[in-house]
Amino acid sequence: MDTNRLPLQKNKSYLSNQLTKIKLKQIKRHWQLYLIVMLPLLYLLIFKYIPMYGALIAFKDFNAVDGILGSPWAGWKHFEAFFTAPNFWPIVNNTLLLGVYGLLVGFPAPIILALALNEIRNGIFKKSVQMITFAPYFISTVVVVSMIILFTSPRLGIFNHLFEFMGFQQVDFMGIPQYFSHIFVWSDVWQNVGYGAVIYLAALSGVNPQLYEAARVDGATRLQKIIHIDLPSIMPTVVILLILNVGQFMKLGFEKIYLMQNNLNLSASEVLQTYVFKVGIEGANFSFASAVGLFNSVINLILLLLANYLAKRVSESSLW
Image 1 (tube, rainbow, N blue to C red):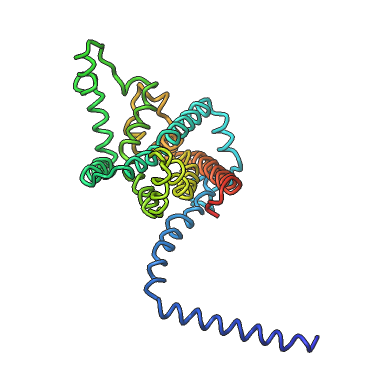
Image 2 (cartoon, rainbow, N blue to C red):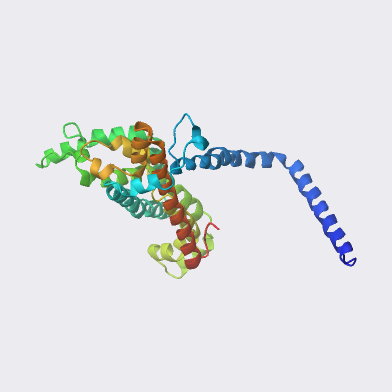
C-alpha cells in the first residue's frame, strides 16, 4: 500500500466527518423547516411511489385470493388485448382530441387574461374581474356538470330558450357527440382561467418598473410593451407550466367526463380514464385495467421527457 496516500485519506475522512457534523447541526438548528419539507415528501412516498408496486398487476392474471405476488404471470397478454380491441383507436383518438383541444385553448387563456389584467389601471374594476374569473375555480365538479346539464337542457336550458326566442330549433347539446369536446373544454376554461392567471400575475408583478418607464419614454404602445417586456418576463414561467401541462396531456378530468357521459355522446366521451374505471372497477378486470392505466402513464412520461428536452434546447428554462 502506498504510504503517501495515507495522510490524504485521513484528511478526506476528517473533512467528511466535519461536514457531517455541520449538516447535523444545521438540521438540529432548523428542524422545523425540515419537518415541513418532510410532510410533502412522505405524501409523495406513501401515495405516489409505494403504489407503483401495484403496476405488477398489469403483467399478471390478478386474483384477490392469491394477491399480487401469488397471482400467475401473464406477460404482455393484457396489453395485446387492449391494443387489438376494436375500441382501442376510438378511445385513444377521443383522449388525444380532448387533450390537444384543451391544451390549445386552456393553456394560453390564463396568459391572455393575466396580460389584460396587468394593463388595467382601475383598481376596483381589476379586483372585480379577478374575483369573477377566480370564483368558478371553487365550484365542485359535480356542481359544474349539473350547471352544464341544466343550461344545455332541450326544454329547460337557457341556451335553448335563447335559440327559441331567436327563431331557431332546440338543440340537445349533451346528446350530440360533436358538441361534447367543445362543452368540456370551454367549461373547463371558464372554471380554471382565473386560477391559472394568478400565477402569471405574480410573475408580472416582479417586472422592473423602470422597463415600463423606458418604454413609455420611447413611445411604445401597450401592445409593444406586452410583446417586448411582459412576455419575455413571464416566459420562464410559461415554459415550466407548458412542460407540466404536456406531462398531463392524457390525464383528463375523469370525474367531469364521467358525469357528462350519456348513451348518446359515448362515442365522443369515452376516454382512457373512463374506460379504465368501467373495465377495472365495474367489470372487476383489474389486470386489464391496470395495463390500460400503465399505458396511459407511460405515454404521459414520454411526453413530459420530450417536452422538457425540447424546452431545454429552445429556451433556457426546463424542469431539470
